Image: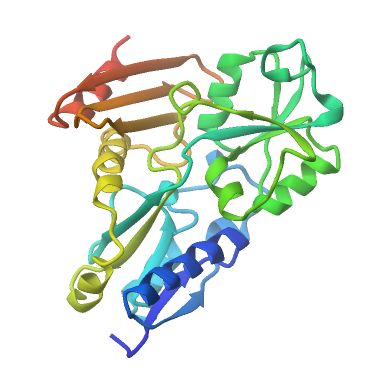
Length: 300
């Protein structure tokens, strides 16, 4: 390990926010660091939706490769982008607090239809490249037209502003972390994550290291949020058991209440344009919870 911890990240505004947040967290623990920007497949290929791109880890593979080559010491990822099976030699060492896990529907004010469900006009053009978001918005409004949209948060908002879409779907966490105020310019539908179910671990950052790099792993224990890990481990276990990635129309959201009980909501479709099956479960321990959810999702 070098004298400064080298933090590997993508170069988008949101990814840099994540890297700077990591740097601040480490600084508070008295640890010096520097940021190394790495371009990923997901950054390079902007003309395809995720379901048309091969493999998994569109936003993580190149960063993981740099970690394995010891060009960086820690990779910071949006945890929802991180495949559940890590490459040999790498481990998730710590996870962050959870920002708002919900999805938001951002509607151009001139296209808002006050009397309609979700305030969308009939046949509205809704932008998203996520199979999960496509399946769930169609579950609520089967009449809408889905149109793929790629790019970082400001780019997608620019396309909405230009009139290429009537509305777009976005993660609340990204908008919040970038400090963007949408409500002045757009109409905002803030979904309840128990109804419009987010991606597993949405709103959480994951810090990944080489498994054998014990000094860095020890340092990252200073920023690890154990309570977040408790619930996101369950969400990601469901994803792993279903062998899912970014292309799978699967939402999983888990909460733990003040009495220690676990509550989980899941929504899955066979494909983005197929019916959505929903599951809700609660139990006092996490034992076999993911397995029960997967079994229920597979029934029928």
